[in-house]
Image 1 (cartoon, rainbow, N blue to C red):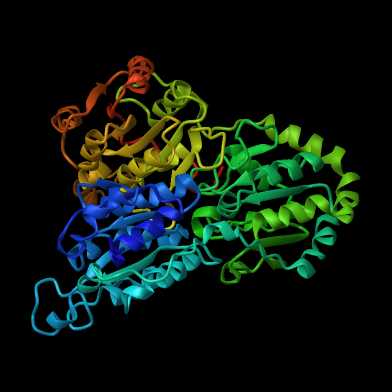
Image 2 (cartoon, rainbow, N blue to C red):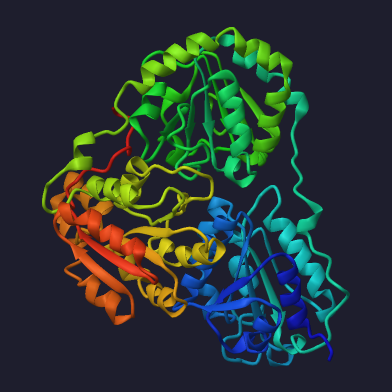
Length: 558
């Protein structure tokens, strides 16, 4: 039997380790549908194309690779634009695969013409992808897929788009596909620039590491921990890198930036640092709140694979193009670095002991609050106590993001998934489905809000259909909380626009086949969470929360 171009693409994806594809079926991908399971790829049908792309994003992030989503040309692709934009902004690889109109139909007013003769899918997605092309011939499908994967997993990681015209899908495939991933990762490092790091670290004992998502992407957690331990250097992380060093490690001060801990903030309070080593983190608003407190007395070294992210802030003294893991391994092997830091290790130990003696949480009493409606900090604290240590936590966008970032402790890379640069509401509801498929061996919990459920709550039905044991915790406060809290300060006339009205999320969850419970009193949180984690399928816990609770870690003020 002749191998078709459609089947050839799917076989190629399977050879790259792809086990699931997330999609909404439709006309331009009809010929792919029967071939998915034959190629060894499980099709996962989402409620909405945007949800399918969120699933592929979550799958890739949880797996440390890329996910695949499929949709029809035209409206299917436009429904995925927000997901593509969020992945592009966060440098998260995912592949969108679709069909396109037969050449003979183009320019004749055909239905859903998403080619250059209509509304071009390729041109629509180009600003939010690292690679976007229509495959020009069936024999070239494998070559274009290779280029797409190399771009997705390259220096500027991100989503890619491929369209295979419908009349090419049943034609014979091209040459045998050669997988990209077995080549192994390329870990570039400007060794010449790294030679300046020992001098930068020699300015005094108060040296710290600020680790970003680049450490997670390059699997640098072990090297980070070994380097920090070797010289007793405190570590703070960005919100996306939360857990790259276990947050109960003595050298972890938690997250700095949005949702950050008081330990991390204390690192930059008072006397400036002598040196700061920023590894795999961009110094954007979310990561720094643009605080000048990050500027050390001595030198700030920033290391990132993408040169375009370096030196955006005036206080970066030594920008270095390099992979996070390669840089940390270079530092571990440098005798000059060891000599430089050994003499100041005792002073750093005393300094760190003083930092850790301070409070970690902005309002520790809120974690044990008995108030009704329930304080969100109590929700997260009780949820962390109930969840297994290795739980994969998928966090949606809203005020609950900051409560989760502040009060949830993460203990391993890949166990905390959040989108921060674009932050679309409802992302976590699809992303968790992808993450559960990617890592079926560990528990999965979603922290979301009622506004997010209004946008993409039907993806809970997808989890039901595939029997996925995901715990959904809904911070149900009846408002768009971040907007509501700002509106109260700006002008009370805007407050009514932030109110969502009552929704019975338990009834909704049960209507789509999930188990569910409502919690209105704090003493009921722990037993309900325990029940949810014992469930063999999706379980929604709707918690009636106080909308007026101020969000932690959203300013540089102590």
